[in-house]
Picture 1 (cartoon, rainbow, N blue to C red):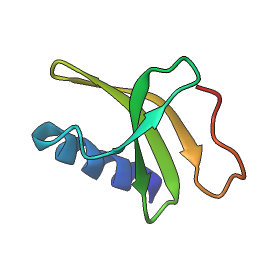
Picture 2: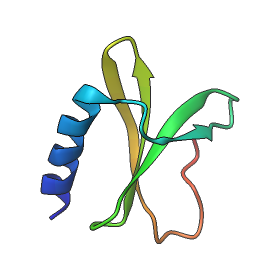
Picture 3: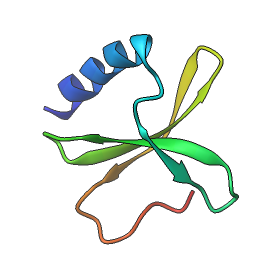
Length: 68
């Protein structure tokens, strides 16, 4: 289930928030993208100090990326 998979990811972020792949937004800023394999969703997020901010959750099956 999606919510279980995302909750597990929150636990992982506590020890290593930088595990996602770097992704460049249209503004040129870098965020991270992580694939939740079972639910097939990408989570786009930013890491600042000790905080993870989720920008968008996007279906990996979509033919295009979100407009970030």
